[in-house]
Image (tube, rainbow, N blue to C red):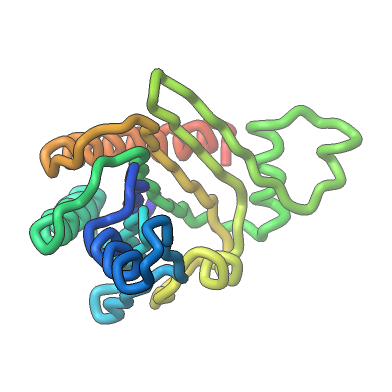
Length: 222
């Protein structure tokens, strides 16, 4: 399967320092010690690198497209966090997740690819047989780790419209779509080594899961 997009997200237990400082100013000059701040996300587009950073009061997200490999994606994401933390110390993490999107082209019309997936994952029934599209979701919880998989057949227009912000030069007409999210719900102090270990564990699971899904479908004789 081909990796087409990754996203690293962090939700913090408290607001980041710049927003805390702004809140302190508002509380001071507004003479309101309980005042809070809000606002729309700050979105930074790095179009030449096909990257996007989304900054919120208590969250950080880094999105990449067009990576060479999972390893490259992890290295770039870890470096982006190092730079962010150097500019302004990041708060404690309440939740961290890493998501990867894969596609695998199939030389089949969409309706035939749909049938392949029905035959491999679903039992024939009056509910399943007439459906013209499917999306399958699988969740696996291991302690504080959630492994989330979403897969199904897809056409290029949906991928470009829904998932890829910067587009692609070559997109197959039909393919298997696979979105994998590796998430930890646990409060920890921000530490770049800890985050890198998390990213490496996420990348290892996602790469292995993508290979497993591909192999499982091919064993069906298609």
